[in-house]
Length: 70
Ligand code: SF4
Ligand code: SF4
Image (cartoon, rainbow, N blue to C red):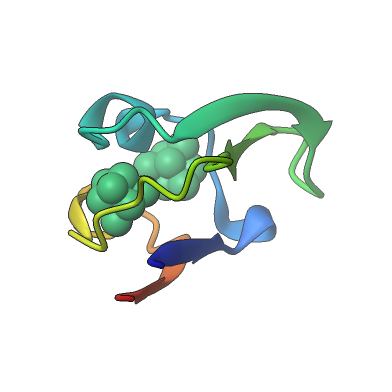
């Protein structure tokens, strides 16, 4: 199963990744990081992540750290 990790303190809350994910697996969280931004969360209860890395390539702040392909 593929998945991503997100460095919460790098997230600037632009939400480009939210729109980029073809499976809509990245959601806006109510949690704030140290910058005061509402971070995003990876939500994949059904194991739908493709490991495509489109989210990581789209993030201007390199906050999506790893994409594991399963
Ligand atoms: S693209 Fe990067 S900086 Fe923008 S919301 Fe997603 S993880 Fe945060
Ligand atoms: S790797 Fe692809 S499918 Fe998985 S969260 Fe990122 S954009 Fe979505």
